Image (cartoon, rainbow, N blue to C red; front, side, top):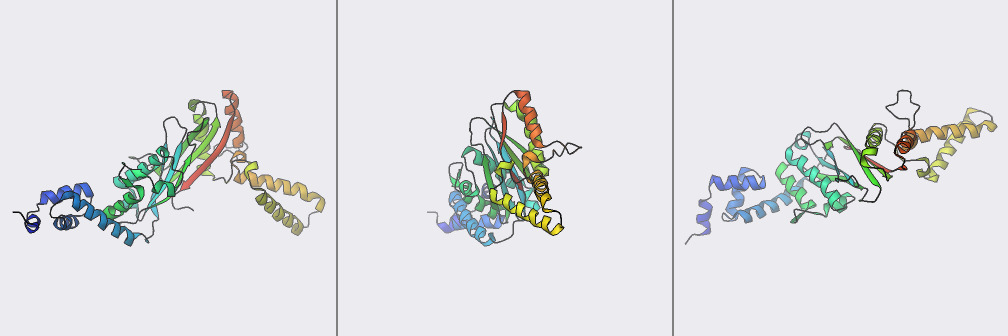
Length: 305
C-alpha cells in the first residue's frame, strides 16, 4: 500500500516541471503544492490558485502605473472596444503573458457586449473562470499587482455603425496594444471601404488634440452659460464698451468650440489650420452620396484619468 508520505517522497523534478508549465508558478511553490496534494496535479493546481488569490490580495494595494491600452474590432467593424490593463512595471507590460491577457480582454468585451470594467470582470474566460479570477492568477504568476482599470464598448452591432481605431506606439508583436488608443464611431449607410480614410483621420485627430464633445450641440447648456459668464466678466474688467460685449463673447465661444468640439477643431494634418473636421465629414459624405455622422469617440491614454 502506497501512503501519502510515500507519494511526497516520490515526487520527481519532471512532475514539478509539468506543474510549472501549467501554472507558471516558481519551482519551490510547485514542489510544495505537489507535496501538499500528495502528488495530485489537479489538486496542486488548485492549491496554487488558492495561494495565488492570497498573493493577489496582498499586492492589490500596490501602485499600477504601467500597462497597456488595447483595441479590438469585430470583423464587420460594427463594434469596437478599448481596455486599459495596468501593472506595476514596464517589464511585466512587455511580457507575452500580459499582452495576451490584455488582448483577450479587449476581444471578450466585444464578444460579450461588456461595456465597462465591471461588466468585463464578471465575464468568463474559456467557460471556466471569471476575468477577475484570471487576473488574480496573473498576479500570482507575474508577481505584480494587475488591475483592469477601464473598458469601453462602442457600436454594439447597431445598423449603420462603423468603428475605426488608432493605437499610438503599437507593440511589434501585439500591434493592437500601445500606450494610447482611440475609437471613433460613425453612423452611416456608407461601406467600411468608403469611410476608412475618414475614420483614420478622425482617430488621429482625437489622439492628437483630445476633444470633449462631438459637436456644439453636445456641449451641456450649463457649460455654455458658465463660459459666457466668464467672458462677460473679462469684458467688464477690460473696460471695453458694453455694446461690443456680445460680439466679443460670440468670438470667444467660437474659440471654445474649436478647442473642445471635434467637428469644429481644425484638422491637425492641414498645415493652414483652416479646415475644420466637419469639412472632412461633409466631403466624404458628398463623395459617397450617403449621410455620415460622428456618433461618438473614446480616447484612453495609459495612466490618464
